[in-house]
Amino acid sequence: MTRRRAAPPEKRFGERLAMMISGKAKLAGVVGWPVGHSLSPRLHGFWLAEHGIDGAYVPLPVRPEDCRAALKMLPKLGFAGINVTVPHKQAAAETMDSLDAAAERTGAVNTVVVESDGRLAGSNTDGFGFLENLKAGVKGWQPTAGTAVVVGAGGAARAIVAALLDAGSPALRLVNRTPAKAEALAADIGGAIDVVAWADRDAALADAALLVNATSLGMRGSAPLQLDLAALPKAAVVTDIVYAPLETPLLKAAAARGHRTVDGLGMLLHQARPGFRRWFGVEPKVTPALRDFVLKDVAG
Ligand code: ATR
Image (cartoon, rainbow, N blue to C red):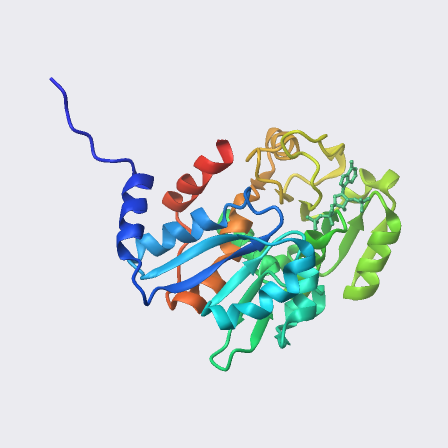
């Protein structure tokens, strides 16, 4: 006997989404180059379907030389706004009519809102996503708990360092393979940042309450972060911006020592919330169902 099974959730969501788009649909998307790897269309598509919103979120592959012109066209095309991903975040910051404090501080924009008068308002929600992910992942976690060690000095590290210090982190040790980049980040962001030499990174873990990998090390297909966790207090929380794989070699080693760990996928999910709320008028939630849905893309 053959049994009819209900269509899998992604199929049902896809059908509902297609049926719901009208001529009045609100439009958003993500600009990047390349953009094919972005999980954002799937993530926002889930929320649009979940809330039954007449809207669409599309990938926009835009070459670096076309970035500014593309952003300037958004109001003319009727977009409510967009996300900005690699390599356009800095160029986007320079193209905006206004910046929020986090975008100003990091010099990078990941979320654009087209205001009613057509002006482009840029914000950076990566730091927000990072903090929300830790709060959701570790009950009672507070940035004020103690010293944070951040490895990396790229765009992601910049957003994370600024967010931690703004949220009350009492001290921050910054470790990067290229010390000049860490020095530049510390000078730009200001505050209680100690730049630690790459060779001294193991010792820098002593007394820390939080360890963050903000480099691309540990990503599928790249080398792991070489770090001896022996000096890290057992109470310290360990997190990674890498989410493919979900359990990086660093998180695996930390979990084996009994640390509480938080994977990087949640940072991506939480950073998306403010944009969705502004474009589509609904406060979305990060749920296990959303994680599972987006994870199917990470695993694939
Ligand atoms: P993002 O904007 O995503 O943070 P990025 O600006 O390219 O990306 O930064 C990548 C980070 O990973 C940097 O801190 C980089 O260190 P350098 O500043 O020394 O380049 C770090 N990184 C990448 N590959 C590395 C490796 N093999 N060893 C050590 N650090 C590495």
